[in-house]
Length: 419
Image 1 (cartoon, helix red, strand yellow):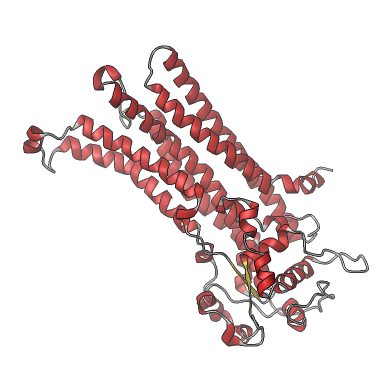
Image 2: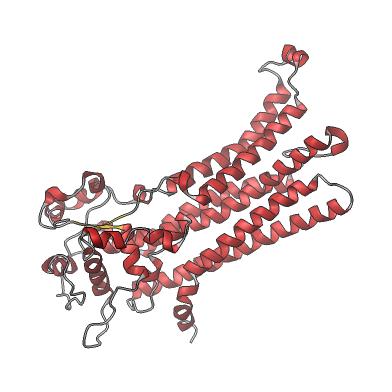
């Protein structure tokens, strides 16, 4: 894309955010488009005040976003878990002597999903919030360099993790449908008596809906929306409120960096942290170099090299979207803001891993109880055991994948804090 024409800015991206006019951007604008020189010179000092939108990439604002993202979902899902594991009235009794073996097997199968879905949803919420934290910080770092990071549009229905979560929720809802149909059987005689004023049925439906179904549907809606990272970013109107004249000038030199390109540059370690003389770049210069390197992928052949860069990281979109961490958490970024962000990230990641371990332990405990029931002759519990083992396998995939992309690359950095 040419960087000397405002008309070349695609309309569908302009609403996302507008960059500032800092000294670092003037350095970038002086560099020729697609230049192979990825070693920026020192940036001149600037007495320009920081624009208000820059705070969105700061630790305080990101902490609020992270807390709200995790907090709302965690509270709702925790309430569901409390009801599932403490309330006997919410779940159906799967006694084969009363309802028959086939119905008992289906009952145990769906009941296991009722228990497992909130556990899986909590883990996914942590991954969503972690990805959001990294992507938003990267976006605003790049935005200061007169460039917009164009996150890849991804349809949630194609992501394996979203399909697994949706399948788990669907089967959990089936348990309540089975419970209602068993306790309130629909036959010719019952249809004559059944009406919407039947208090027992209406009370049961309301209880199930308020305590489980509605919170679960809200989570699924949240998860669907989480795949659109750009929806959370700074709108055009917010930037124009602060400095309309500067915003109009900025449009003329705006650059768009496709996410595939940015992810490849980070994954292939194509970012320079030192100049030819061995001098360490400042963090501001590193991101200037990063934007220039991304811009070098301008031709058709270069763009083909970046295809599938996200899929090479992970086939789970929410995990592959954590690629900005390889740059943002690099210990060669020595400014105070980057150091504080790394500490915050390690703290959040440690809490997240503890939660994942606790959830896995809860699944193991529940599975052990089912094994005990099976040994005592409750064969229908085999269905529940199968479901719980399947969810445990999903968690054993997500947990190590999260650790691989969120912790292991930065162990060296983490150790430095304790030397």
